[in-house]
Length: 196
Ligand code: NI
Image 1: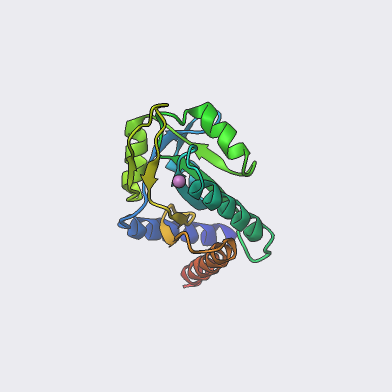
Image 2: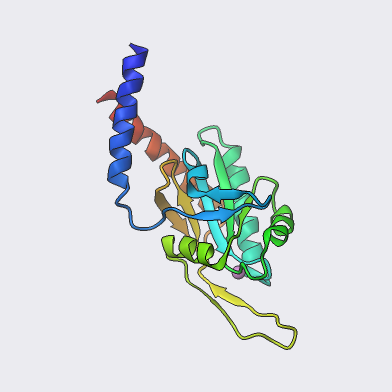
């Protein structure tokens, strides 16, 4: 009995994944994590994810947004109705944000945070997937520059599908509430599919 039910669940899950494959935002990427190891979008499958694109030299917006993101993850993790969630930062400035820079940067926010970088081409691929805009400004006499970029936190479900996103005006509580509601919806949909 249990075996048959599991088989049925697997089949339905496969069908659902196929249908969701059409989703336009989000998708595959291949980058390098803060330990220098290859990290791809498949490594996040089966997990809820809060994803943010930025750069470590960002003077104030990225630090504020990452602090908010980590706070949201703490609120979610403390909620009994929530599923586990992974926070991820992807740099849009791979020229300066190498593995070491990303590792040191994310350590300032949370030990739970994963930080990703890569070649320019790999980063371009990831930003294209999520339709993230970024553009490096002019360099000053110290070769310093600001990267203008999209300020959005993405919520991705365990199938790798983008389900929601949060702009700068959202608080950590807003993000946490949104994520927990999406988790409940996802579970109820799965239950319905499983008992059909
Ligand atoms: Ni920034």
